Image 1 (tube, helix red, strand yellow):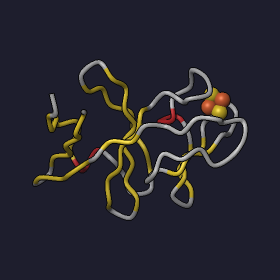
Image 2: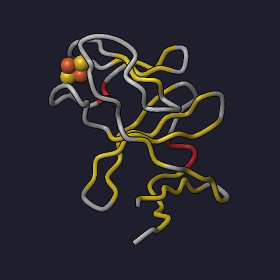
Image 3: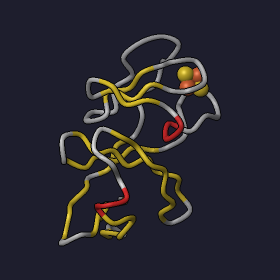
Length: 103
Ligand code: FES
């Protein structure tokens, strides 16, 4: 079931920052990069840490636990100790609402 789901309002995600949201039992991280919204899974692929507790820098999210970094746009694992990319989700903005496509 491919469905666009409302997950947050635009004002909830500060620029160059990340928040955690729940959507259909999934924990997602929402990012605002220069006003553009991106989404990934929130739980790191390396261990049980939330990326929404990490740091956004230069288009990457740094995991708070072991400082692994993912590219926010592609989900690609950029450095050790990460070995697995993180899943990304299509996003769109309608009015003041952020929607995510969960396939
Ligand atoms: Fe994220 Fe180890 S849990 S880098």
